[in-house]
Length: 321
Image 1 (tube, one colour):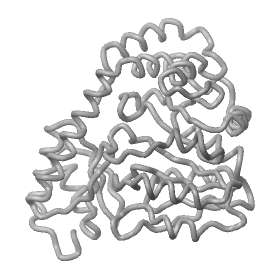
Image 2: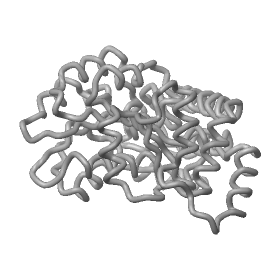
Image 3: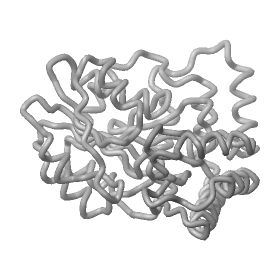
């Protein structure tokens, strides 16, 4: 889903000032986020996407000889970022419902654990931890371990988690959010995090200056202000998500309830077959060999093309593929 005309105008105006440096820490966007979320500015850090902010946080708090726990399958960048900072990733399999296994993640914590990443809603399955499970996990994690809540898809979520309230209650909770999804700015790279002031200060000290470009900040500020367009994107995605899940179910393909802007098809051994069929029908999807296919929603013609690809596969097998 593209950004609104208001955002495109703001980006063009900023581009005309590209010879000027941006602020060191994205001060205007920090002020905007702080005002709407009613969070003190010293708790807000902005940067070139939530992924960059996650990397800076890992660099500030982990490293050689430390461990970072995360669910798997989850966002494939996690083990990459953890490896970049020299820490050891500790992947914990999802449960049978393809959701974070809270008990298993807690059991994976050792004296060497410095952080635990929770992607909620989860990428690529779209599954969501309910509020009670998020709160139970946070209350059970030692205070010396950071709990990194990746909420890249929160605007599309069907489960309400008061993550900002949790970040206020627990100094070791850090919330990451992005302008890439519901705000239509994936190509500009802008995101923000909410954390205890001490954590925020340490992340700022780790991050290089000018981490948020002048154009990205202008686009993010305009998108943040254009709430009607964000609501439109969320509504279109929600409708497309249910349309695709319902039509897939009519064809015998079961998909988990998604709180993201995509639908997960757990087709197992037929993953490559479904991916190739989608490509043949003009749609690029994200395939995870032997596991499943993630299909982003939002354009009805693309969703119909995926359904046409599914029709070429025939009925699913007993293993779900």
